[in-house]
Length: 223
Length: 223
DNA sequence: CCAAAAGTGTTCTTACTACACCCATGT
DNA sequence: ACATGGGTGTAGTAAGAACACTTTTGG
Image (tube, rainbow over all chains, first blue to last red; front, side, top):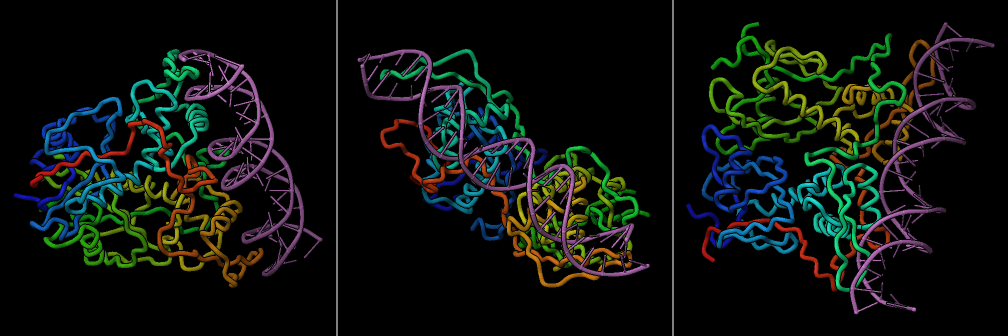
């Protein structure tokens, strides 16, 4: 039962009979890694490469799980947190899984409010900036970050402020996310329905167009 | 082995040992539905609900497969193409799978060039408009569609034109897609790195920030 | 010359970026 | 006072929506 010897691997484990994939993952994270505070969980993709596990054919469904930076979950001795920019050698296809997870996170950070799962309950813009920079991999302007997220209604200011540091400086306002479930905050504006008629019917009366959205279905029962 | 009697179902079938999920799907589509001309194939998600199949526990990985409108694949007698707006009763969770497939297609149509897999090799803007309308479910302006896709470099005009119909009208230019593999044409402009320094490093030298992108890994081998 | 369909010119609007400037606190 | 970090004002810009107008064909 020894996986690729000398390599690290992502936490996870076999799916039980009568268990959902998502529940299975939560179970493994809680039991083996003592990780219970997951603010957001999303399925990524199922890997089916026949040679991905040298021990034989194993299908693996990868998930993205986000943990707030205000928790710092202690993990067992055989487990550690790794900076994504400085990963050790990884078993199986786990390196590429991490890459696709990061891609997904990057995308979702830009058009949804997922950051609610990464930030503390209340936070300063400076803190949020660090979180975005860590995920996106490039610098982010605190000024514009604040304004964009306020404008979108993603975050709102609380009354609280945080004491300024020993070096002085204006005390920072504390903000919070307005919602704690996934919301699309930047629906692709493009190709949206015309202003006048949001749900306008699209069959132009006399048009002989044969184009229609369709799907192949098979009926294996009586017909 | 009878699935939900009296219901239609999506084409597909069991995964063989030593077979990739994607290959398996192509095989089932080719054999059972005689569908070979797939221009784009993408994994959607794996459904694990314990009760999704009344016969017992079955995991299913759904795919989105696009077929060009210039093919009209003949399908066996037990199979038919259905307008997405007018689906029959479907077995299992297939209805909800179709919904998420459509969501995915809608999104990808707006920020990628996937439409290359739906359109004929060359086409008029009117044809493309019908395709977009069918997928998006709302009307689309031919004028703006053309300009946006040209500006993005997604399509380009050929020299050819198509004869005008018997009612007159200016003959339409034929266009083609500039690429026939998936490309992101509208990268989310938001939170992009600052102009001056596209790949600027983000550690602000003396910053003691502890925030870093990290991932939990478990080492079950010797360490 | 008129109708029909295709395509272009032009303006409007929205939403983000850039950057100068002002604010509040500690030493 | 002045350094430091937080926040606002304001102009610049990119890209799509809307709509009037021109172009090219058939009757």
